[in-house]
Length: 164
Image (cartoon, rainbow, N blue to C red; front, top):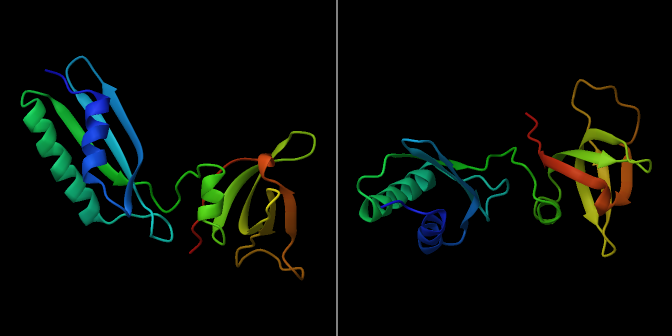
């Protein structure tokens, strides 16, 4: 008997309770075995990071449920955090992580991409962003940090940026 992706999502849905949530789930199949990758999110952590204990608990619970359904299944289970430099899910994560540094791909008026690190200062009710450019300690300071204002639609992708 094989286990389906839907069955695993159902098991995770029964077990994961707020503030833990499923960030992503993927199954990779080969002719002999399958690899299940579960990525978790912590909805109340500033960066969404989950603990090792959270990962171990989910792994243990999911593994035991899989064994009940199909004791003969040859599989590997990987449970991990989405990470502090996670990919952003636009536009929702812009609201969620407002005030944090983000590495963003932005389109200019001509549709050309540029990348930069910004702190999201504000998203107004009309969907316009106010972004403050980030300068690391080694970069030359020339007065105030530039602020960029643009429509939300011009942000194409991004991830959180951790500066140490």
